Image (cartoon, rainbow, N blue to C red; front, top):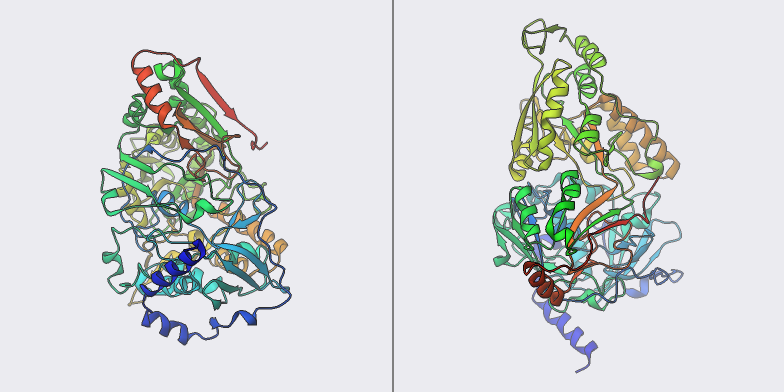
Length: 627
């Protein structure tokens, strides 16, 4: 039997296992202008197909497959669901964002399109439709082939109220004008309007596995809570791989389709990636030094510099590596819940900006290695307004602003009060990571300004739930940023700030990314206009106007930005030439590293026997370092 015949038979058998979903079919029929069906002969004859072949491979052909990569996590995720309440948690990247593919990917060094689930693509002359030829070999991790029907199902699934995911419902309604199926492996995706970066928008569409969701219904949240959502990536979480609050194991898919593709071969090399729950980062660091973890982030200066006197480093078995990347910067800082008094008062929020001594944190705790973040939207190229600067620490300016809010008298404990005797006192929530150790610095600096910050440290999952339920005053937080195009609807639009109750009253809207509760009509209008914009310069202008309002509204206190990442890794962890790619957020982002199992056995035994591998090694990889 030829390989082609085997593939065709496998596709036919797998497709037969996925019955038509009558509810989905009815949904398609109800929207005939959105869901369209045609024949291959209906494709335009003047299309200019591209396949990304001019882009260079970035994985190392010397990479070795096999072994287990041993890492740690401070907690397992509250749910394995990809969509719905609590799904946007800190483990999402490992499970889904770094382990799944859209129609196209962006080359991590050039940012140009490369094939992913589509082998080739074409854009219509008017820029309103993108055509894609799907890879017939592509499979979900459960073995189901990826076909055109899985892209249609994406719209049905995410727009369903059962998914309980308003952001997705909005996105899949507003950002696409339709989809056409020509055959099982040819589709067209239609844009709702002319806009810059059209191919990036349309090529970002991902399939949803119809077979896995054959039981999708009103009980979705409960039924799928602890089940891994199949992806098109190299790893899956098998039922035995999810041990709540103990460990999470990602197992490599046997005969993964991407191993035969130019931009995906030589990647995702370990057979397993195991994350052991170690709640205390100091404990994880000791586990690393014992050789029981293969690498760990050591971004915190006390680990980076403290490693210098540790035996594994001194004897050449443990290497420190610093990699400078070029990515949009996650907005690390303090998020103020503007729906709670006194944070609903702008003067209080502006005062808090001046009452937070981030520079002292940067100079002391971070030893000057981190940089001050100036605003929420940083690192977005032309879309970032470089004139916006974070407000400086100033007790004088802070107290003047608090006085304008009515907090103009000092109590016996030095905390400001208003005429009714209400103290300027707020709860400041952190997680239990190493960052909690500079809570005292922020508390002390605020007290000099007449503010009481009551520190609260919570385990990561508990903190995540509290913040997403909008039960916080102030919290240290950051969102990951996947695009250089600002996407502010989810974090700053009133749609995601307030719910209207049956009696007409407003209440904070739970489970949205607008964790500051900001609700500003002019900002809403600008966000809506930005989402409807058709010209790049218009988008740039709107972006900078939005950023100015966000700065003026002071719902976010910019904290810090990290110009890359730092890790400590054992000698058996191998990296490609150049160490990593420009767009990488961490060593696992693009799956380029691998484990040398023979070296692991030998080097660990030699180390425990008192051996020496060589002099201490510190590597600085600064090819992508900016100014």
